Length: 142
View (cartoon, rainbow, N blue to C red):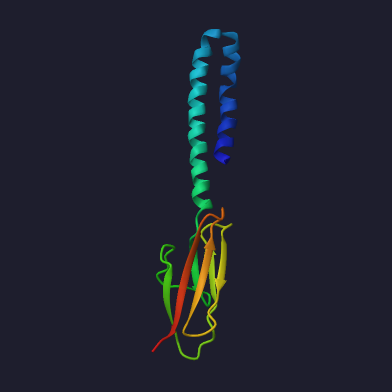
């Protein structure tokens, strides 16, 4: 959006003399129309690109990070939805935290209540059209 606003401001300053001279010289009207058509086409492309970026991010239901007890899960990938996590014996219950890839997406974490146990992390996209469920299977290391 900022690009378009800056673009429009620049257009208004750069082409104001063209508008004035076109009013006094009707022969330049055709050139002015060509320039305006090119500007409109470029603006439509910019708006289309911005619209696509918004749509793509609004439906993003992935995580940017997944942590156990404050430490990132090794080999975390937003496209990997199932993990096995080994814990040493006599350890406190793990605490999971997660960050969505898009700020306004929703993350709901169901912590495990026992070891071995399962924790689930549900990510709902910003536009509420998509859900992704990540799981962490906790087991005791041997």
